[in-house]
Image (cartoon, rainbow, N blue to C red):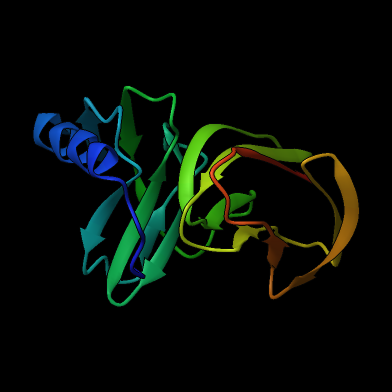
Length: 168
């Protein structure tokens, strides 16, 4: 992934969380325990597989990047269960964000993210079958076009958390 500035204490927490993470096979998938503190899981060489978001738990999105698949972990999850499939998903999900999610909620009608951005000035969200969506960033309403099923939401990189809502 792209380079991201991280404070040393956040990096240490991430390393400790990574060392504490355990995985086990479950019927049709993999379960990862002790993921609290991790932003994402990286799966190398996933071929053309993606997480089946209708069955997967604790994952709020994903991104394919340079031969790897990055799974975005729900910040409230203690564990995640991942089931893979071929093809894309039909429900909305977070594709790219450059920051730490404090909270996230995804339904068929709305995505709400509280984010402390540190690396990117935009968030990309997969939104199937829409031309335009309503967006609220820190209380400011706007309308954003959806291009190739992706809505790009501009944000400011600053230390304070930002709240992003995408109304589908």
